[in-house]
Image 1 (spheres, one colour):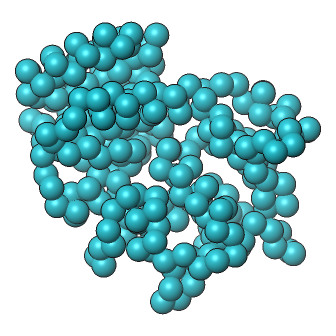
Image 2: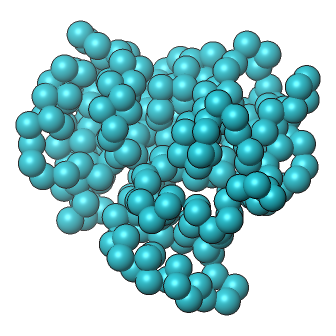
Length: 249
């Protein structure tokens, strides 16, 4: 049974979301503040598959909770809820590692749909890496697998599994979406505004470093030397370009 943690200080809202998620067949735990949620996640041996995280919380903001979890290496899916409407607030949410930012008041069916989608990704990502390793030896024709960097990097977009030099690496849903976009536009220069619109679903904001921060992450994962990237290239004054193979790779 999938386990969902709701971190929400509005009791009536937390109860309503919990009731509807339990009706969908999920195990649901609720917390009303950030520190309690972090303690629960660190001390509870049972894994949490999805966190529904309010932005404005007593004691610690949702931003801080999300940032701490990502710094600890957690790849759990995070759905952030907020009544804030500014683009800058959504950008900051993505910068600290949230997967989906849903504005209050939200439609219940939309929340349930997003939760199902994120949980489905978690299910695929937690399938065994042994399976992917076996597939690498004989990739299915027309499958979802993609290899680059002279075969060092193997990505399966169906299972959300990644192997780099034979080592399993966990990418967040947004990182996988960004990687897919680069692969689909290999060799082309893509601008930051294009990425914000097509990957993050938001209009261009000249002050955001969201895209740059995510590129840094992809370089850490896939480049032999992130300081001298060969696959995720910066194009001065324009954006970025993805190159799958290089002659001296």
